Length: 573
Image (cartoon, rainbow, N blue to C red):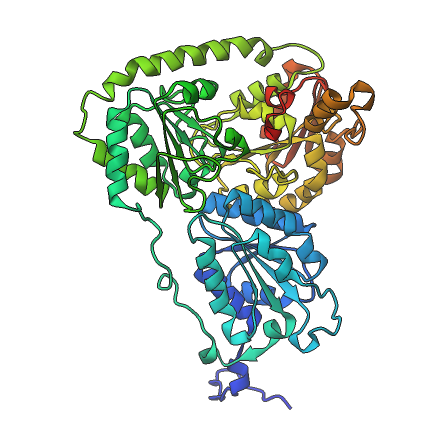
C-alpha cells in the first residue's frame, strides 16, 4: 500500500535503488547530441528508435517529426548549412533508413556535416531475420565519411562523438550510426558510459596548411596583373566570409561565387561579378579557386585557362583532381585567405591599384551581358518567361530573406539572376543535383533563423516530391513562401530529349500534367494563388508575404523556354 504523507510533514528520506539511477542508450544518444550543440532532430517515428525521443525530451532537444524520411535527412542537411553545427536525423530501420539515402548522398556531395542515426533489430536477433533488418552500414559507407554499428550501450555517446569528429575532418560530410534496439533500450550505470566532455575531445580545424605556401601565393598575387577568384561553398562552410571579402577588397581581385559562397559580396559590390566568368577564366593570368572541386561545374577543370591556377580547399584529395594546379593549399579556406591577405601587404603596394583597368574591362563586359538579357528579364510574354519570374523574385527578396532553390531548369534560370543580399542566404542542392530538397531546407532555415523570411523556388516536379511536408512546417510554426515554377514538364531533361530524338519523342517520361498547386493550399488552410500574367507575380508574392503563414504561389511558365545551360547541356559536358 502506498504511504500517505500528512500535509505539512516532510517527506521521508527514501533510498533509491541502483536500478532507478540507471540510464538507457536512447538517453545517452540525447546527451551526446546536446554535447554537440544540437537543439533539434528531424525524424519519422519507428519502434526501433523511440527511446531516443524519450531522451531528447529530458535534454530539451526539439523533435521535428516529418512525413517522409527523405525530408528528415534534407532538413538535417539544411540545419547544418544554416548553423555550422552537425545536423541530425533519426530514422527507423529498414525502409526508414533506405528512404533517407538520398538526403545523405546529397549531403555527401555538398560536404554538409550531418549525422543520420538509424535503428536496427536487436543484437540478440542478429541474422535471424528481425523486423526491418538490413545491412544498413554496408549501404551507407560509400556515401558517408563514417558509418558503423554501435556495439554496446556503454559506447553510444562515444560513437556519436567519433561520428562528429569524422564529419568535421577535412572537407565536411555526413556520418551514419546504426544502433540496435537492445543497445538503445538497455539501462546501465551512468558511470560505465563513455561520455566525452563537450569542447574537450576535438582539435581545431582552422589550419592554414604549410606557411611556405602562403608566402608562395602572396608572391603570385603580388605579381598578378589580371587575377580573379571563384569563391565556393567552403567559404560559407568555414564561416570565412569576412576573410574572403577582405581578400577581394584589399587585393582588388574580381570575384565570382557559386553554391553557398553566393552572398559573400553584396549584389552591388564593385568586385562582384556573375555573368563574365568564362571571360575571366579565359583571360586572367591567375585564377584562384576556393572551396569548389574541379567537377562538372568547371568542366572538370577545362574552364580554367589561366597560365597560373591555384586551388584552396579543405580536402587534400580534392586539390589537383581532374586538372593540374600550379599551387594547392589545404586547410580552413577562410584562415588561408586571411593569412594570404596579410602576407601580400607591403609586397607590391601598386599591384592592387594597377588592376583597376582589369576590373573596368570585366565590368564593361558584365554590363553588356546584363543589358543583353534585360528584355527577357522584363518580358511581358504570356506564358510567362522563366527569366521574368527570376527577375521578380530577385527584386522581391530583402536583406532578411533566405532563398532556397529546388528544381531543374527553373532554378538554373534563377541561378543566373537571383542574388542573395548577404552570406548564408542561399541554399541549393549542390553538385548531386537532388530534387526534393526544398521542403526540408525551408523548414530547417526557418527553425534556425526564425526572424528571417524564407522563400523557396520549386519546379513543379520537385515540389510534388516532398511538398506534402509543408503540413509539417505548419504544425511546427515554420512558415515559408513556396513559389512553384509550373511548366508541366521535367524541362531540363525534356530539352535534351528533343535535341536528341526530335519533338515527337521529346515528351516521353517527362510530362507532369497541369496541376493547380494553389489548391493544395486550400486543403492546408494557408494562402495560395495562381499566377498567369507576368505583371501579377510581384503582387502575388506580396500577398503571400502579408499572409504570415506558409503560402503557395503557383506561377505558370512557358514550357518551351530553356535556360542557356540546359540548351547547351553543359551539365553533361
